Structures are given as structure tokens and as C-alpha cells.
Length: 426
Image 1 (tube, rainbow, N blue to C red):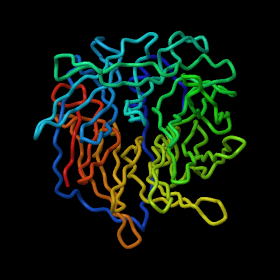
Image 2 (image 1 turned 60 degrees about the horizontal axis):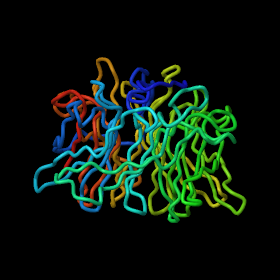
Image 3 (image 1 turned 30 degrees about the horizontal axis):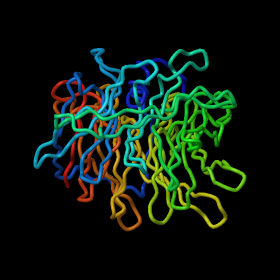
């Protein structure tokens, strides 16, 4: 992985960073069966226009009322530097409301991660750029921000929300990190956690905690990524015990790590190192967990030599404290592996997306897939291949509602060419 910087990179790296890489040559796993696409219905809920709504959406999340929230990376027309939106369900229709539009500079711009709801009911997210001066890069440090509905009626059903900069990176002179690219998560005490791509003791980025003290957020660096382990390629995820998990990689090294909290702080351990064969490499996405404590993730493949495929894998905790890795699926040689987190339904089925692969191949614009556990094996099903038409192209990860419907975004394509929000009904 090569470090890059600048607002154009910020807008595109979350979804396009692997499209130029040739996927790997591979052989099929005998434990995997593959079936043709079942009858699925993809509905486009919204097509972005590159106007006040922005362009290049990066994933969605739900509120309790069933409305969707997400971010746009930027506006190609120069009208904004990204934004936050709400897609409101109105009976059988959906209405998009821009909640906030970034204007760059000190308030941040070009968010790459999505948004989450905090314990106070506000939306929280991060931008890798904007905020303050750090590392000789003007306005490239990044911020964590929050958005809340206005307490006063604005006379319009679609009211903008109040934006607050919660934490500005780059002000910690004690090897603090900067450029958060994957959003934040909360623990039960209301503390925030995430990763940065730069800074830290070795300038390879950090895992950080933000905690409240004297009515302000303060940063605690809980892990420094060294040259030996590469840069953070995902955000963080909690397991049921309160431990944090993430992935890191560089051009030669890919791994999954765990951060275990103790009375002395957070202790890091590598729980799996990818070997560069059929287990894949370059884990762009983080982990999700099932009720038994097994973790699931993906690898995008190796862009260096094209000999390592993209995969879906499982990590299972063992009684001796180690983790056992099992490859659940290996993607064909002409398909780029996933770069977004998986989702799991109540039955244990996994859902994900591939970003697409340029050239003459069956997955040029990306797809949505399902992996279903059946009698000890996993069945791979293609749910939808994107066409770069009204459905969009280059999908992000997926989100499930309680009825088992899948929701996601495409960073490009659609009726206007600037991305879509879509739904797939079973």
C-alpha cells in the first residue's frame, strides 16, 4: 500500500483504490459450491445529481425509524467538499435531505467513512482532511464531527442539522495520529474509537480513543502502527468482550490484530498474518462477529504481482488463545476482491460487495453477493451485477434491515452518473 494524500485521493480512495489492480490467479476450493443468481429485485432509491446532494456516496446506516444516513465524498462540480445526508422513508417513497455540506478548510472535508449514532442521539463521523496544520500539510489533519437536529423549527420539512467539530487532529504533539479515514465507533461508556492513517510514534498511523474530560474530547493513542505491520486499512470493531479488532497492511505484510484492554491500557497482538497464497492479502475491510465470537472479513488480493486472490475468511478463537483462519470463498481471477465490511443476517448468511474490475470481465462494475452456510460448506450466490446504468457502479458495503432487505450505495453510475442508493429485496 502506498501513502497518498490530497482531496482528490480522499474522495476516491475508499472505493476506487483497488480498481487498477489486476486480481489474482487462483484455484477453486473444493468445499465451496457456487450457484447462479437467484431471483432478486434491486430498486434504486435515489440517484445523486452532484448538486446540493453531493456525489460519490459511501455507505448507509439506519435509525430506529428506518431512515438511512450516509456521507458523500465531494462534489465534482465544486459546490461542496462532501456532505452528510438523510434518506427519509415516506410511505412507499424516499426523500433525500442534505443534513450538512462541508466547505473545506478548518471544518473538514471529503469524508471517506460513514456516520454512526452516538449515545446522545447525534450523528458522528470523521473527515481525513481539514481541521488544522500537521506534518507540514495545511488543513490535512482531519476532524471528528457531530450533527444534531435543530431544536427550533425552521419552517421547512427538510431542515439542515447543527454541525459541531468534536475533535481536531494534529494538535497532540506527543505522537498523536491524524487523517482518520474509517469513521468512529462507541463503547458502552460513550468513548469513541477509530484509526488514523498517518502520525503516531512511527508515522504509520494509530488506533485512538477519544474520551470526555472537562467538557471536551481528548485523544489517547492506544496503538502505534510500525513499519513492520503496515498502515491501518480498516476502522475498529468491538467483539462481545469489549476487545477491539482491525486490519493493517503495506505492500508486503497484511494482518488482523486485536487490542485487549487491561488495567495498564491496551495490549496489541497480531491474531492472523496473511501468507500471500490462497488466503489472500490486503485486507481493506474490518471484521464482523457472530454470536459464537467468530470473526468474518475479506481480502482484496495483492496488487503487487497479481498472484494472490481476494477472499472471504473466518477467524475462530481457540482454547489456547490463538485464532484459526478458514477461507470460506476465493474469488475468481478476473474479479477484484471485496474492500468493504461484510454484513450478517440472523440465519448466519454473509453479504458483501466487490468494487468491480476494469476490462472485459463479468464483474466490470461490481456486484452484491451472498455466502450461505449449508451442511458445513458455504454456498456463493451472485445477487446483482451492476451495469453502470441506472443501477450504478462500484458498490460499497451492505446494510441489513430487520426484514432482511439489503441496502447500499454505488459511488458512481446511476441516472445522473454520480452514484446511487439501492435496495435488494429477498
